[in-house]
Length: 263
Image (tube, rainbow, N blue to C red):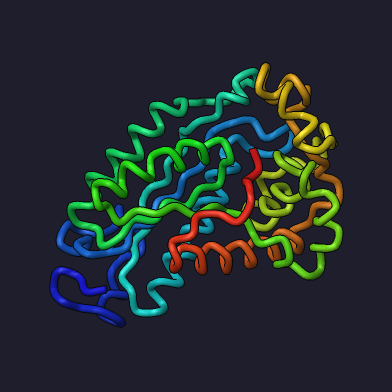
């Protein structure tokens, strides 16, 4: 994709990878990759910005993939406040709600469309999905080149763990083994394994009615939906690499998500 000077390939890849590090003329025509996370409880052992850490790490790698193939891509600052109302009963959660998030994302897309060749939102919080799905028809009607992808690896993407994951993925929705493993890979010093404990492990279908009435606290007093026991940095690395591969393929094909995200 050419920039304002008509450059592609190696010339474009020399530009800074972060939007904040560029000057104005260097931004024109770039693919803008926007990490979308949350600030919400993740049990007694994971930091409040877990979703944002994951979204940012995946988005960084997506930018690298595009730049390596000769396309100019740039990483936007992460959006860390989103729709997290289901976690409102837990201290530290900051939710701006679905309506405010919709306005933020629509106006971001409208503004960046004036100069970006394309906009890709990389989402790592399941609570944002209904809003993302709802705003896309509006942006499509306005002919905005915007898509979103979810930070979710395909079920068969990590051979060493998929057999075990297949049996527990339905009850590993929030601060369980998957997110704990990812954080042990991405930010190990910030994981408090000594405080990790299992939460509710029932299938989502059984939990959903109560969650819709009273949020996560209604079904899980410690905020965990799943069991972090057995999490490891090695498993997190395999899951992360599979996630990056899946996100890259879906971003290239404008396909948002294969399955539902964790909460």
